[in-house]
Length: 200
Figure 1 (cartoon, one colour):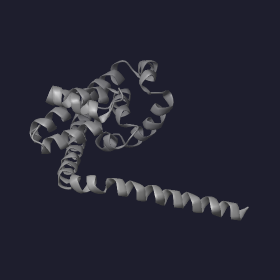
Figure 2 (cartoon, rainbow, N blue to C red):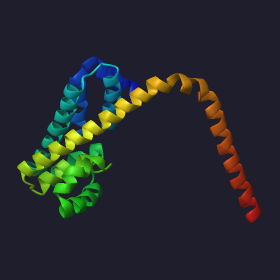
Figure 3 (cartoon, rainbow, N blue to C red):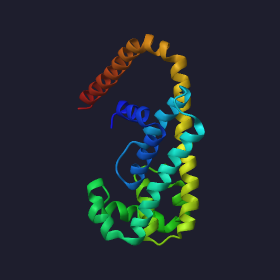
Figure 4 (tube, one colour):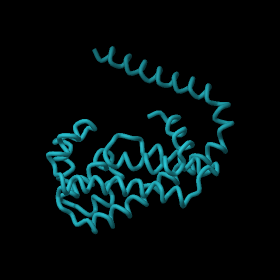
């Protein structure tokens, strides 16, 4: 989804939109959750959102989606996940790779796994499949959700602050900067090609 579409969705639905995006992403449906949180953080600097309700809605969406994933893994099992997960990119190979890490570390994976691209959405399913204690899963998943959401919101805040501070300078020097970058890239590849020809 394009950044503009996310921003429009957030503007239109507010905290509910943030909750919904985080919810469906944590069920396993591909959605740019990090981008959503970062944009939400930028919107916070523009007084569209307040920090506490924003963090709560993002965390609850994350927790709710992960809890459903846990329930699917625990009560429906791996065959159902593989059968229907193929439509959203969940395959046996991905599950096997993530499961090796999960069975080895369990609680730390739940706590830190949201920061690991590629396995974040698999962790709740694996926790359910491996019959991890629901209480333990909930505790670590909640801590992880709050920290993870808070981090990207804060990142968005500082992007928003810096952007508002420097956007005039960036706009003024954007074209010259692009020209310089293109020239440098052209020189680099030109020298590389020349070196290859000499080597022959």
